[in-house]
Length: 215
Image 1 (cartoon, rainbow, N blue to C red):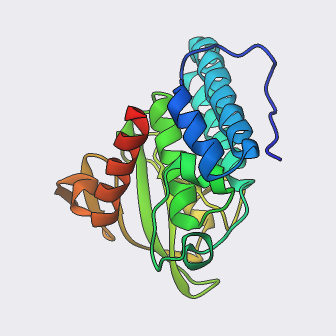
Image 2: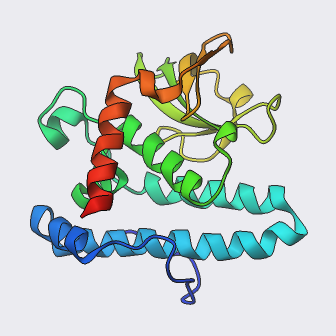
């Protein structure tokens, strides 16, 4: 059961799931899946309210708290590889699918965190979905990197090491490439215009998100 840490007074309306989407999730997954979506909705709504208050005192502090709560929330979802979860070799789930099935792999964690932070108004130029080689498990891995400023050291949001750490404290990760909606970066930081539209699985994910929004 996902934990809701925040106050009972949520600001309504940030994430509005249609009745058709709720009915679909209930049929495809379970009534508990619907409850998990409602917890996610409440978390986003409460964090938006907290940001509005906190930003007046310290934008950086409010954004840091948002990162940690988003990271902690999705890291509660149990890990399952795509073959086990979806019966496919490589499948990028939407946050609705991830919470519906209550399982995900590294791509799903990173995407759900990225989309949640984007929904909360964190500028996408501060966020990069990042492919890495995870030396600790000797396999390809995905994390979300958050850059407080363009030249700052990024903070890493990961499901393997669950607390946020600066990149310098993650020598186990070797960057391969990264992307957001606007750009793709090579491992050495060179930017190529075009963004995630160049990544086939990302295009498929956007199509699924669009279908969910039309339900």
